[in-house]
Image (tube, rainbow, N blue to C red; front, side, top):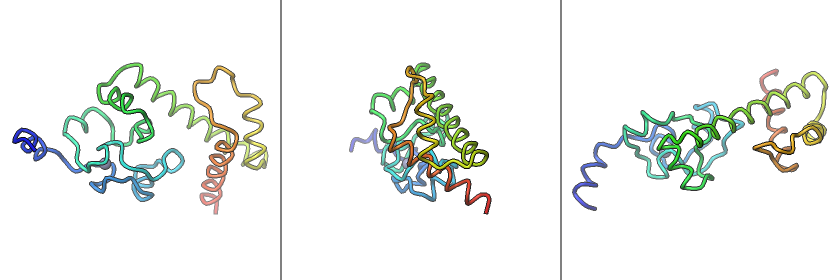
Length: 155
Ligand SMILES: [Zn+2]
C-alpha cells in the first residue's frame, strides 16, 4: 500500500449502508426501508470495502435504491459521477418499483386478487416499450412479497 493510499484510507468513514460489514443484510434493508427493493448482497455503496470517502456520502444518498451490486461497474461509476442520464435511469427505476408496489397492493386489497392473477393482469397491460420489466416468475415472486408485507401491516 502506498503512503498516499494509506493517508487517504485513514480519512475514509465507516460505510453508512452496511455499517462497515461489507454486506447489506436484512437488518440494513429494514433500517433503510428497502424491503421490497433490495435483497441481501455485498454492499454496492462501499463496494464491499466497508469504508467510503466523505465525498461519496455527500454525493450519493446512502439509500439510493438504484445503486446495487448487480449493476455493471461502469453504471456504478456513473452514479458516483452524477451522470444525468444514469441518475434519470435510477429515478425511473424507483418510479417503476413504486408503481408496481401500488398496483399490486391495490389489486390485492380491493379486488382480492392473488399474486399470479395480478401478475397476469399487469403483463397483459404492460407497455411494450416499458423501460423496466420483470419476467413472469420474478414478477409473481415480487407481488407475493408485496402481499406478504401488506398482510403483516394489516394484522
Ligand atoms: Zn458498505
